[in-house]
Amino acid sequence: MGKEHLEKINPSFVSHYESIDPTDEFFEFMDRPLKKSIRINTLKVNLNSFAPFLASKYKVERIPFIPIGLYMYHDSPGNTVEHQLGYYFVQETASMIPPQILAPEPGELVLDMCAAPGGKTTQIAQYMDNTGCVIANDARKSRANILCSNLQRMGVINTVVTVKDGRFFKRFKDTFDKVLLDAPCSNAGLVRKNYKYLRDWSLKYVRKLSNLQKELIMAAYEALKPGGILVYSTCTLEPDENEGVVDHLLQNTMAEIEPIRINVRSHTPFTEFEGKIYTSEVEKCLRLHPQDNDTEGFFIARIRKE
Image 1 (cartoon, rainbow, N blue to C red):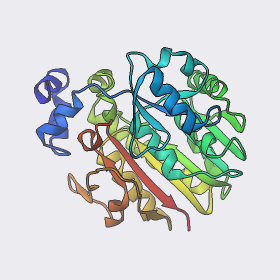
Image 2 (image 1 turned 45 degrees about the vertical axis):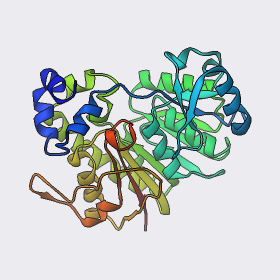
Image 3 (image 1 turned 135 degrees about the horizontal axis):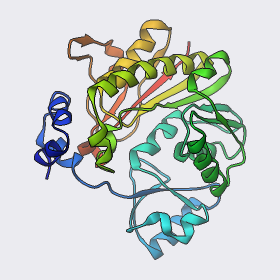
Image 4 (image 1 turned 180 degrees about the vertical axis):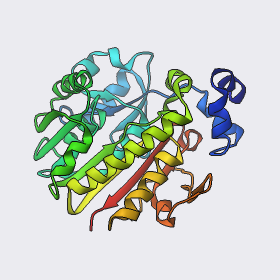
């Protein structure tokens, strides 16, 4: 297992990622199954009473850096009665971090630009106590249908679902208190979840997505109110899709990157990669490699509009 196994599936991936993280530990973790995790839905249950109840039925463990998250040692956490009732959402651990960093508050107007299947959207609504308004958008109708189903199951009532290309929201200048852009990406961080992402990965696809991500982040920033917060995240470790996209925003706007304060291990973001130089401000972003906290690979930036 590890590098040799991944190389048999996609040697180009391994060759490229050796310049991002050459350690044996990185490739070993990339080839390990993900730990199953869930997010308790406080729109329907009380956190302090439901967590012990769940622990009495299943083997669970607190996620130290996600107060509403649990590791769940169960073959199919999506097949329980509690899941069907919307008492919890099956969600990868690192995926719970962007809404927590966004920190939406009750009564705000929030845009979730690429929302399906709805894990982060329902988490945002949870932090907002089902007040204010969330615009949950996805570019594909089929994915929006799944989003609607999850919103209903989780008891979310403050959300409007739209089906638009995310760049559409550029026209809503200075409108939203907060914006989450969990951008479409090359999904390298999801290799632990499904080797499909490893087989499908290519540098050509990375570069295509990088151009789209730059357009999306510019639109998201335009839609944000002055003083508002934009969180940009991906489940990949590609500098072109992460530091490069944030750098593009910084070079073309007055945006400011804010440090992310969360008690996790992380890797220092790239300020240079394959001849491209990025501003040192990107070092304030959060780069999570799978071996750091036994999660999928993830990248998160918290941005304030001036």
